[in-house]
Length: 214
Image 1 (tube, helix red, strand yellow):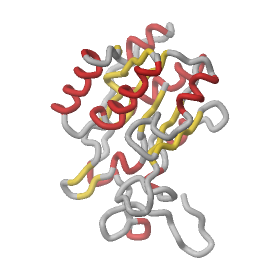
Image 2 (tube, one colour):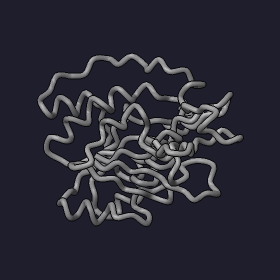
Image 3 (cartoon, one colour):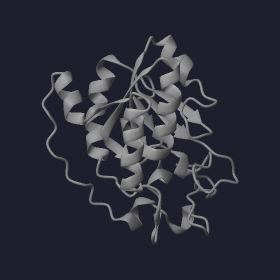
Image 4 (cartoon, one colour):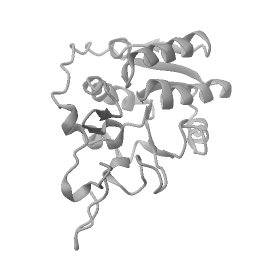
């Protein structure tokens, strides 16, 4: 299972500016993680950019795994993959890690459908990997571009689609009930406060004397 860009900055929101508009898939994603962890590997793929970038700056809270999922990361069993570009395979160890673990089938989820998820699928297929996108565990800003990207992945790349209930059934579990959207207004998603936000709304690590970055 490859979880792409589930980071604080992926849920940035300030006024009418936001990174990911759709976030009600989070409970479904959280419900799937234990099933995958039983007998396969989970890769948390995070974008880290240099100090010139507005988002995903290395060392800031914005680049950390999103607060709703942070406790789901198992630092012993899971792998953290840091990428500098859109694709999880571009300048990373992901392909090597997959081959070391004899993994040939990968499930993709995360943000954004038409950017990082799309680019990752595009790079995965030529490597001989069978790619399945978990279509109800994807974040996006534009529904039109989300649907276009899904269609191209299926029709052009040969990617499979599946929903979370199908996966749970395959593992012999009980189908997850319909999830209620997280009751988090857009203006609260970015967690910005005076002490950890720059003037342009970018999240930064706390720098108080005697404290450590969260």
